[in-house]
Image (cartoon, rainbow over all chains, first blue to last red; front, side):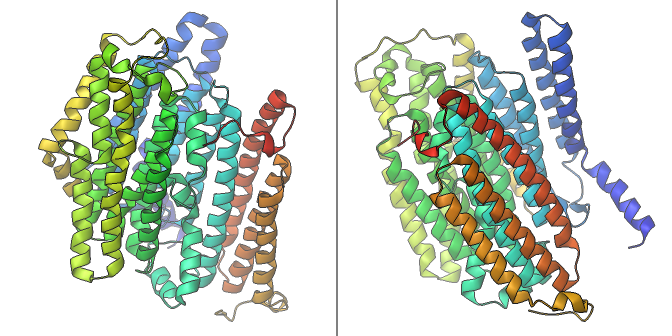
Length: 487
Length: 112
């Protein structure tokens, strides 16, 4: 490429990443707007105005992404970023999670410092770049942009344990990204390239002995597994989930996982097949560890944290199956998990507004708030994967993909993963149904705090219930989108 | 390891294997430091040691392959590590204000 062509490529690339450029500008504009409003505006209106600015920015981002829907799959800043409709689909999921977080914050009248909104914008920008990354440099940089904003989100939030949770998050994050970098440097030494879609990387990797290959791959995946909160990089999850306020936990438990899952899919399609047994083992161990440890949790958010470790294991089962249905299933599972998990956090918060979510405080609340409690029961059943909910459809898709893959390849570990996954779905029922049990069959032990949600909380949760049931009876509403994006 | 003929003499004076051993040793020292030290600042120093061993390894590979992309990567790692430590030290100051200690053994409110 000569200089002219390169300049041409750069200007083309810049027009192809408009949503990201917009978010970067929006981050700065938001910070300046916040300073000006705090200086010149009156205190009472500032929060409301800043909220409207964020909302307008999020909606504009959504519009810009929808504008990318029909763009041809092509590289941006070759070979750093690659934009295809899969990336666009995951970006839409991320923006929806962002909007849902705001809905949650507004419904429960949280008063956060305005900087948190700016940090959320930076985190979303990191996730956007992550969905397009095809080079270890961009993976590392966007992962760090996301990580640093999430450390600050946790540490800066107005909660007593925030600093401790933030420090633990940061230490585990820094160590796992150091391990990832060591793996990347080994992979670079083995192959001479950092672009993981380059066929040269797969060929050069395949010539190494299995031990070297597995070690290098496991270390390289460290940073990704940390974000997905998979064993052995899962230790931070329950502490951070307990330390941070519920809306932020709900955001951090879903959106980064969606972005990282797409990177994992890209890595899995371009790396040697030895990666799959490794990922399969990680998935099975994560599902088991998450489910078994969740059994004796005393805090609703810690319980949901261990549940999210197990759910992340199920998320990558679709990638392990490694066929068309598997990738579609994993995408569907991500969307379903986004809906279910964020709804679960919202309902838990609606029942005991802005509390420490100790399980004991939920006893007997089902009689006081029957509507919310019934919906929470449905969501828990859906997270366990029973019909008639979207959770069942999602699990059904990934397990049938795994079964197809077993029939074709005939490797026994695929069958073990399948059996382990199904047994674990049964184990998970035991703790998912604990919250409904407390709500309906125990008598109230503490005086319930006055509920601050009114009509809107019920309306929103009713709509979410509708979506959860609708996607079970008509999964093709979502599947036809997913079929479009994975050609 | 493959070698291209364009590598200057001066680089070849030290074989690639030595770089690999040195950086692995530094990385392992960093991991041990993270595991056994109780002071939050010393843990951050150990993480920095891990990152710098990675930088050394990337530069060694890069000069032995005559390929500049890893050297660019190293600049990014240095910049990001600085950002990470800035956030980390801010959090440590927050904790010190609350508890008057930066010993991580006292961070035991979150358990289970």
